[in-house]
Amino acid sequence: MRGALGTAARLLAVVFVAIAAVLHYLENLDPVTIPSMAEDVKTLEENLRLQNRSCFLLGASGETGKVLLQELLERNIFSKITLIGRRKLTFEDKAYENLVQEVVDFEKLDEYAAAFQGHDVGYCCLGTTKAKAGTEGFIRVDHDYVLKSAELAKAGGCTQFHLESSKGADKNSSFLYLRVKGQVEADIEALGFDRYSIYRPVVLLVDRQESRPSEWMARKFLGTLSSVFPTAMSIPIQAVAKAMVSNTLLQPEKQTEILENKAIYTLGSSTHK
Ligand SMILES: NC(=O)c1ccc[n+]([C@@H]2O[C@H](COP(=O)([O-])OP(=O)(O)OC[C@H]3O[C@@H](n4cnc5c(N)ncnc54)[C@H](OP(=O)(O)O)[C@@H]3O)[C@@H](O)[C@H]2O)c1
Image 1 (cartoon, rainbow, N blue to C red):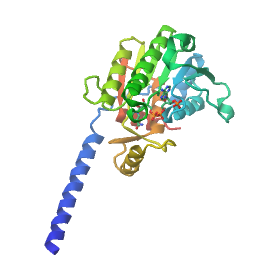
Image 2: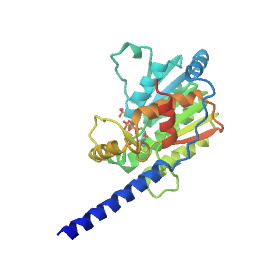
Image 3: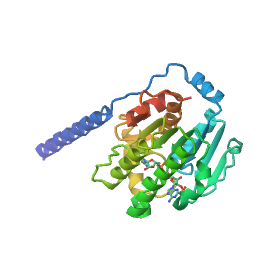
Image 4: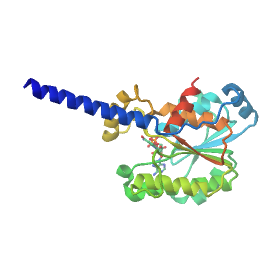
């Protein structure tokens, strides 16, 4: 009996060490290439503020979009913020009173080209899931709506596009989710924005109101792990939002840049207020 217990304990220890090794590997997998903050954040924010730039946000009612909108308002770097979505959102707080809202029918986006005109910067946190929308619906939203919005924005004078994509996005993947994410990344790159930033987070740590049981369970597990391995398998949603805004202040080295999870986390954490 004691021998069996000893063997079980040794096995458990081996499994534990193996899991820790995998997490350690994942934690250090992504090369962290973050453009350096030559000047302090406040100066960069002030510089952008003086340029009177405008931005639009797709997906402001979603989990990332909500936090991104908060961050954009708090940092006050744009003179005009437009929300483009399928429904009008209501906000209690005075901080939201100057927002412009454009309600569009994503199935007929060409008829709403005016909503996409005259913005300098675009942020996209739009998306659904196969479970919610089915395969066709998922492709329609995560690829077609996103690409069409980017096309209209580009035609309307937008020079910068920031896309929340996903870890592992790959247009050649055999997994639908990753393939669609990779395809939309590539199709938007072909539009030739002056600057195109792709953010590839892993599982978002957020207290979602909507019921997604598998995501909830994954989050409970990942939330615990994240105290030891903060970027191996998850990321707080605030870090993604902060990184998207902070990155806007920086000059990328290339026209298209990809921020993997660790870079997002590092940028999002290093610029905490
Ligand atoms: N969740 C994760 O762990 C995770 C991880 C990596 C990457 N991502 C990606 O990150 C992005 C944002 O994720 P999230 O979890 O923050 O999103 P979310 O909470 O699901 O919000 C999605 C947004 O897209 C809009 N939307 C969905 N279906 C639509 C439709 N048919 N027509 C028009 N608008 C529609 C929603 O508008 P309504 O409020 O009107 O529905 C909402 O504003 C997504 O592209 C997602 O794939 C997510």
